[in-house]
Image 1 (cartoon, one colour):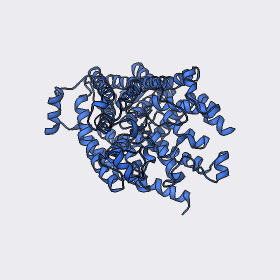
Image 2: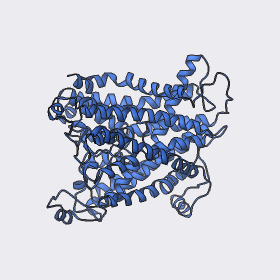
Image 3: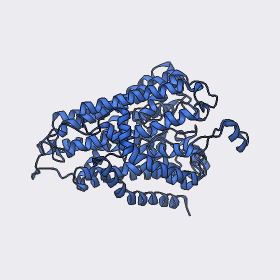
Image 4: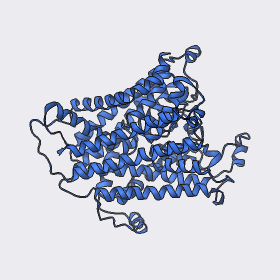
Length: 553
């Protein structure tokens, strides 16, 4: 069987599996977020938190709850790292340096999981489990909660509240993420992933004296890393390490976990607004962009269009022979189309245009299907912008799902869209214009520029993957990228919740002859076009200086 045929079968089987799980998982999440009954475990958590689960919140209170929870989480994760040498299961590691601890705390709480350190030689087991792995769950659940709050803004009429953040947070964690993670961890353990508390000495004996390898609860952390679309891995080589990704079929299963919830959430959206076909339209937009990205990434890598790959006959540099070119390219596309950031190959070693695709996926805003929750609310904001543009074309007030898109709504949607491009472009410019930023570069020319651009794109879009080739474990980069992560996470969330609060107060607008149908292929094509055009207009000059210039040369 040829490499191309094997790659097609690999992708086709993923599509089939996601299609089979789309409806049942989407319906389950609809019941989770629409139900009124609380389990005994959930009631216990609410009493511990001191919240009233039946008291709903206005958008401002909801936003303050998100920020308060996140600030406490940042302080907790930072403190555990700084006190690591005094904790149980520290493996004898020293406290994490302050700038690294700051960057890591921000990274995991914002669902970015950018790692400027080697996990197996920096973090003890307790910090990995109680600080980092917990944030893999709850930071993903925060994104899901915000998405559901926005959906309620469309679904409810003449209301003041958009739900209760604490209820949405707990339910998303307890009823959705934990059960799937439990089953997924068992599957990965069966596939050969490590799940123990071995010390470095004990495991080095099994691995022929490789002292840098440590044991630990790898399987459970790996599954929530993929399920929660987080980039942070137990080992520095991430999903290329055989303890994190053992075989070809565990590679397939991890990609499936990455895409599972984001592709099911449009079904939840359709059920909550009472129009399943609207969810189908959003799903179609996501699938169109995702399939195009996967195909192009595979084409660029399989063509081996660069000097060294052409000489070698394939673009295998930086890729594991267990996965090969095609499956590595599919993994790279999946992790950057979402907010995952996990890697099973070295993106810095991709062909110029192949390396551009993961970068472009993040620049799209990671909406196809995007992060857990973040992809859905990002796509809905793009849908709002699309109906506004369409309304200007026909000269009438735009509407979406029975809600008018007026000046306040489009301002909030525009500010949401502008946050990450500003962070990416300003951050890259500052890094290229000061000695601390330039000193960390290992490559010059267009490729070196691409490495810096990739780092700020990944941080600002809360992805977590790295192009490599840049020494980012420095005080300057830890602080700069940390600021991009925190602003790139919480400013968009505030704008989304403000949009939800504006929409939920509106009375429904009856459909008329001038209403744009938002469930047909025409609208799907318009949203795809608006998404790509906005990104092209914003980032084309930067891409021209980086991967496009390298590809032409």
